[in-house]
Figure 1 (cartoon, rainbow over the protein chains, first blue to last red):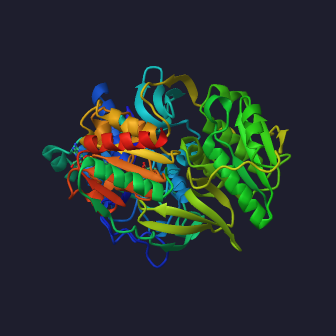
Figure 2: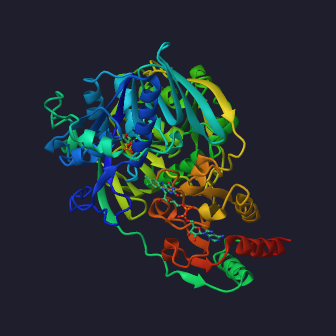
Figure 3: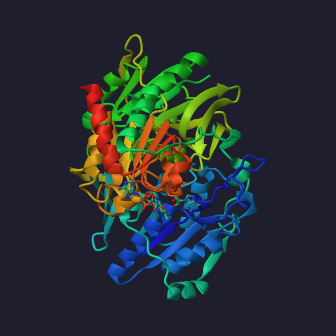
Length: 263
Length: 331
Ligand SMILES: Cc1cc2nc3c(=O)[nH]c(=O)nc-3n(C[C@H](O)[C@H](O)[C@H](O)COP(=O)(O)OP(=O)(O)OC[C@H]3O[C@@H](n4cnc5c(N)ncnc54)[C@H](O)[C@@H]3O)c2cc1C
Ligand SMILES: Nc1ncnc2c1ncn2[C@@H]1O[C@H](COP(=O)(O)O)[C@@H](O)[C@H]1O
């Protein structure tokens, strides 16, 4: 079983410093990058499937700045087989349309039964790349996965897609693209052995030219969206700390809700 | 000058999703202020009911019947139809829209991604408001977990916009519009994904993304029984139940109710947090709520830094007192 996991390095959401540079693009130097939270969940799901099958391999695919291999090492330490890192100066500032085009092109060079992606990313700018990648490749897209069950003998996959009232059971032939959620289950911590092994795992670097793409049709020169301006959200008023009996606390809440016309 | 299209996501039992009514209202206002036509689009195996409902908000609704939508995931079916409507060399292709609006729910996002790939149009996601400039739409979004508000545009002047739930109130038009059945020639097709089964699960509650009031419980609630307090308060306030990952991972409440980085991002008028510390990964999902009220027995919990009211105390004691007072008010 061959699974490609799309891994997006994102600014660490636990840091306070995310900001845009003067060009309106994310200032990537300002904040350390981490693997997008949802990508760790889909990687975990991929690892479990390979373990259960007793065979297979996982390739990480990332389109990211030159610093990405540091971020990818952690995912390799969790147990992925190898990494493919697409990087090119022309890709700086890419929008989702370019990202999907480039990832789809890079996937065209890989062999896989399934492509896993996170359902969205914590920078709050996305959630559309996986569906776009699937459309480019002409592959079925199964999204909001809470469970992924491939049947390699029938070459199909079943996915539980979270719905408003429960779930939908989806089925499609392989190969397929799957967008997964946290409901897939908690990602493992890399073991010491895994961390050691990751140092020697291969990360292949691919440029736009390697993929047969040119910097005029994708990347920073071909953006479809641009930030016009940005501002900090209005500061919240200072917190009112209420101490006293439970009844006094409750009274203050009720009065506050009435003041705000919420009740 | 092109029109605005509003694509309706499928709602429960063939009806209109509330988020689509909100997107339609937003588009109608935008159309009125910029002099653009607004067209609603419903794609379903039987689009009649949703189309009639959408026409209460918009002057014109195209009803596109596609039998494939009955037993297949909606977004691939709908994306093929929308792409065909946009096809530059297609037959009977309507005037190209300046913006395609859709709710930022699961189906809306899937559709936006697929249509973007098929058409090359850019996408701006989770809009909190949309205005118009000389260069086309200007879309306000909240990014980095609410740390920054941006306005963005499309370099080509047109694109796809997903609208966050609850940023506008759905208001019907003065007079209902007309529904026009429409067939789409040469639908660009994406591989279909079969829906084998639709399963309803007990314990899944009202959608937190659409709720105006959320009462959320964290690890401090202590267990599934403790969530009864959260549920009773939600009921008394007419709100939905939310949770932290700690509560979800403990199996006290389904993942559908989780708020935060890997859960849902919500913006209710009131967020009442019980036994929640306010970790950054939770905060990014709720920090833009209108009012934040927290009950926590630890006065040093991080949520004290961004709540409007922070009651130091036991959530069960304060919760019971609150229930009593709320019931006294309404009774
Ligand atoms: C990649 C990643 C993604 C994550 N995504 C999310 C996410 O989407 N959503 C999310 O919520 N978290 C997420 N987390 C987890 C997050 O870091 C916190 O662990 C989690 O939010 C803590 O939940 P909590 O506030 O319920 O629990 P705790 O932090 O344990 O807080 C419990 C609070 O309850 C109080 N308390 C206890 N008993 C009582 C009582 N009787 N009365 C009053 N107060 C009481 C305590 O004082 C404490 O402040 C994520 C973490 C990671 C690493
Ligand atoms: N630059 C990228 N490199 C690799 N994977 C990506 C990239 N951008 C997005 N993805 C994948 O698509 C998912 C959703 O991303 P987004 O649409 O940007 O929110 C991520 O969780 C990744 O799995």
